[in-house]
Image (cartoon, rainbow, N blue to C red; front, side):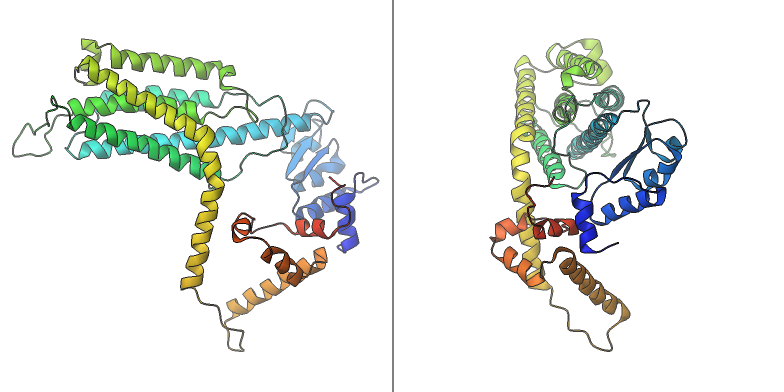
Amino acid sequence: MRTDTFKHILMRGTIYARMSPEQKAEMIQYLQELGYITGFCGDGANDCSALKSADMGLSLSEAEASVAAPFTSNSTDIKCVVQLLREGRCSIATSFSCFKYMAIYSMVQFTTVCLLYIYNVNLTDFQYLWADLFTIMSIAICMDRARPYKKLVPKRPSASLTSKKVLTSLIGNTLLTIGFQIAVFFLVESQSWYQKQLPVDPTDPDSVENEGDLNTAMFMLTMFQYVFAGSIFIIGPPYRESAFRNYWYVGVISLLTILDLWILLIPVGKIYSIFGIMHTTVKWRFTIFGMVVANFVACYVGERHVFPRLAIPLAKIFRLIGLGYKRLFHKHKPAHHADMPSDSVSDEKQKLTSRTSLEELGHVSQAAYDRNVSGMSLWTRLGRRTNRKPYKYLQEAMVGTNTWH
């Protein structure tokens, strides 16, 4: 059952009929061994074992099959599979958006507090309350209310939080927001009207009041950073509908932006006293507004155009650095001897077994594959995935691989 002919049949077959419940489950498992992500639809008790074995089991009835399947459809039409794929891709895109937003929000607040702690100053209680409760919570709740996109595209979303695209986007936007905070910090200190806050009690260096020019400037900048970070990380097509179709999200972002602009540009005595911020000149308030706009434009352009293009080259550079590190500091392991530990023996057996199975599976010798890879440039080889599935080698060994799907 696991000969090369059988594997060719699995890869080329379209219809499998007259199968027992056990054979359905076995076929799912064989496809998974070849590296496929399998889905299975069933409407009866004889499909329960296959529904459990599949990566995506979908019951087309509310009878016995619905107990074994993770998903159940009210319709008996298999068109629901497309809807399930759309919902799944929308869910993972939403999860990644929320992850990046919560990560950059934490870094923004952490940087603000660290800069203020240089002079033993901190955010006021109501400033913390405004950022954590009113801004962050409302945006995080509304970000996940977007519906899936109406079309199913061939390209799949990233499935790893540590992928190069996710990390490049997160690190790049974090560095931009931190850079603008540091710029505002030094810009405040360079102003002629700036007065360094001194301890109220000369014997206690921690008795510095939080209200001051530095606290005001940092809070006015960061309250906008919390808002537009949610706008930048919201993912629309091709996995989710446009952010403008998420009316709750648009309403919350618009309301928070209006309130933040009101606090920044229109000084009100009671509002300032509640937040613990200082009255500043009109020129300085518009300077902060210019920094906010510049920060938003830089993050938006980076997220949409710069960081996606930098992801692959940066990944290759880090792989090249890692390759050089291994060649410099890691020596080759000695050949196997009779007194080698059992762990080393098992590792050598595993490597030999994996190479043998690779040659048997794809009829491609290791020497032929090495010649194929060695003909590529180093930069191209660094972009190839190291954990290629065995069925990909089988595809290369098959005749007429361009005609099958």
